[in-house]
Image 1 (cartoon, rainbow, N blue to C red):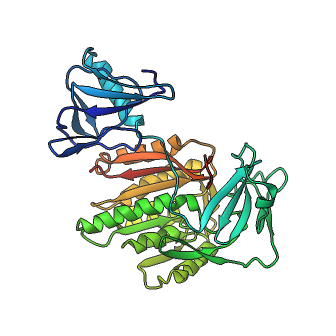
Image 2 (cartoon, rainbow, N blue to C red):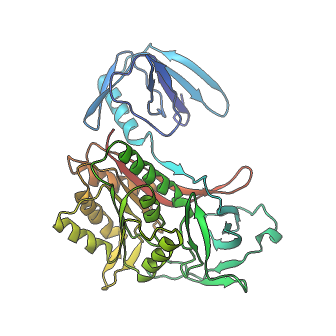
Image 3 (spheres, rainbow, N blue to C red):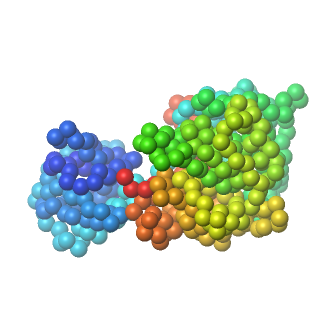
Length: 412
């Protein structure tokens, strides 16, 4: 089969090892009441003998009888492959490649928003609804034409980028400012699931939150709730670095976690306090700290503190409250390494999101993977990566990537 065809593999023999799950196309087959899940294979693998391959220092088996289903725009077919032997070295290499790339990259799109929608995009802009109001913001990836008419692009606020952009290292590399309709309130309430918080136009063209990160909020909450149900030894402790307006912190606390929220910006911390009050979570176990993230982590390592989950959303460039300078190109990997040292003996996750950097999601993936593999305590975990994206709220929606991410979880 051509390499660009997606192939789903279904075992016809009872699975003898650890179950391995993937997020792309795959088949399920139940044998002896046991559901089997296998990574998709994006190229042909012909096996006649059972192959044993190492993955994260554990072993799993692939049966000699594989039912392979090919899906392509032109045709669909399935066949039984039992006819060809591969040298073990060649088969091992293909399995190693599969384990590195099969579930990666992912494109995550939130689908539970009611107070936010990407209405349309085009001509290097995007039209969004945030609560009852509409906004137009720059979107350099929207190379196509808008689908909605000019009357529907009438907005309550438009961010106008400065001509030529700014050429410094700030997080807001584009510069510019808002043109807001008279009478637009300074802020207003929006919600995600049962969480309420405040939205507002900010000088950095944001609206006080990042809607694409809802996928992360739900993922973290699921890990926290699962750990609590499984009898985690204590309330999961989550560290949120570069935590901005606090939605991820509030969502994690709402799921049952104890959260330490760290941001170098006093304005961001003040906004996070407002969101806490808006959500009615004044008594939630959240500790708000105004400090440089890297300096805070170094101190926590010296103190021997531990966290069960760590969330990082670093800017490309930033300054701490005492003039500390952050550059993601030079400072990210050392920070990830220090964060790894903060993980507890019963860790849940480490989550990295990267905006405003000219790199693919693979940069985040391998930065995370190399750091986690350096320690035997975390080397057996699984790293997945990809892009956070938004999809237009219309038929045949176009999808716009917003950020890269990498996630680490312990092996199940």
